[in-house]
Length: 624
Image 1 (cartoon, rainbow, N blue to C red):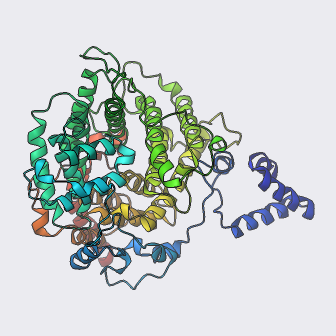
Image 2: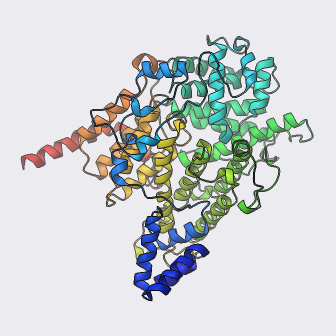
């Protein structure tokens, strides 16, 4: 029966191989063993369920076959140890434009790693920072005179570097404004597509990102933050104000001012509603005129879809009580989209990969968040929420929508050996969303698990789909931390770390649970320099670990000390004096029933008492 099921699921080429093995041996068991050995020899990790095999065979855009990850190699790699870069060496490389190799940074007293992951972790700085020939994301930035836009004492060169870093890293997936229009106004001192508020909000986030390379930039971040919030109070409803307000919301997450994240996200949405961007609702004061110039239309559409996407992300992934999303997707076109998404086979070949990816990434992101928005009822009860008996069927429908979306992605947005930061983040979001869709209905006894009826295999349960996405997420996090320098300064991907850590603690019978948990912990350590929220998240995760496992308080404290050593030095961290706040969820399962206890800051507050209690228990056991 297993051979027959495999023949139904496999691609034609793989089915032919299995049939050949069957004809040669005549024994189904021997043929199946031969086929699996060949699959292992080809470097493909075995599927953990028949549903995962079906997904890999029929939907490789969402579930590509995976290469095995050797647990020993991963355990010995430098992505499972603190980065803790030397400030002097790091700044020397920033000024010289040389390769930034975190594997060479001083670490703990562990032996030097020898593994494929260590060899892969060779990072090139995202911009050419050589003193004689600085290359920005746009040549026009060489003509920037920053003193027109701000009273903060920064150089035009520093500003151009920060803007370049943001423009090439986060903006393609956030899409809040057109970089071309913004840079044009910046350089020419015009105010149609740039404003002082938007500039300061952008520099606030950009300086946090740039602090991964230059510790002094965090001091500037504090000044840009203060000025941005002052300017916001006088802002009128506009597309530029919406974009700047979302940037302010995002900036505050990493900076540990989480109590204001939701406020600014909601205010940006309210502006859009009053401007008529989310339909002519009750509070709309205007309807956007799409007959305006292309530049004005682009500004309108970027602000609308960027604000929509951000509010859906905050509502779905951060799951803060009181979070809202627009009642409908924007009533304006998706910027940059000229034709509907097409199957991969219909896409013209030969297009430049880099440029085509930049053109295609934001429309794909918008379609993704529009699908996720339709599943908002799973966590946010509204008047028209469907009855509970339809939950599984509707979750499966959304799952199918997300799979179809992934299968329609153009080649430049598919996972490959050389995929970009943007592609990896997109696929991390995909599998994080799938986990959230199925989270409320997994974990039942095997006999009570519902079946996903649109799949062929008999074990097509929500639990099997959930496990298949966890497996994809493991590989995505390993690949991203090994190969992308953006993993040290962009916070957009941290949902992958948070969700994977949660799922490792859910299944501590898995012999590799601790390995992948520490992969996530040290992922946050690598983000701790630009984002002080990292320490709070790690404290929350370690509180969960001590609660659920036998991790000692001493071990947990050692890890926290490593996080603190990897963050900014004391003088830089004092740039922000206010208490770190983190009201979003860290314990994802607990958040379903007790969101107050599941918050990051509440779990972090329990860290010290749990650490003392665990060590007390260990001491008691030793004395017995």
